[in-house]
Figure: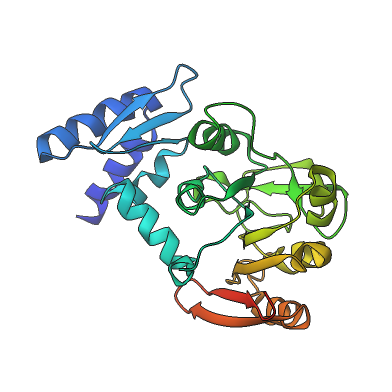
Length: 268
């Protein structure tokens, strides 16, 4: 049985995206599911529909995330970042560091917040533009760091594990522009941050270090502190807690499965 599954997997991996889409749609139809996929003209971006919602994605390896529907994925993502704890009205911006295809843009809109997405992977950023900015180039396509400059990015897009730290089994590496959130906020005139979400594959402390001024006007911070930093897969939990406690935040809750933590400013 294991050999059969391996052979099936190899067969699927060897077909084109368009062939995969035809196979996936036929399988969904046979099972009575409403899920359908359509290919974009560039043969890279796919549009997923579930009978109610639509989402643009670019990695077929991640389609399993939507097997229960797009709404279910959004609810799972919201809970994994502990955003369901935020119930009071908020004003200002939602900062999405490590946006991928911009799924959390829908949460931002539901709260009436201004959405700012950061994603250095080009295809994912293209999808984020389609999902949140009507296809206009609204996603910030640079990395975030403690200061402005240029660093090597280690790309691993099929599992959304691209990082500014060298990781196991990265598929490509290239130089990217990096900026601090303080520099970005000063340039675009951001004054009030409702929610700062950070998923940076180990660079969370560096991003927070570069957001000292921004944190003074931020209400909530949610951070993925999982074991993802570098080849040793270190957690950033301790430095993240130390930085945010020093900046006047307190922990609200944490998710031990994903190792995410939600912080609220004490005085705001």
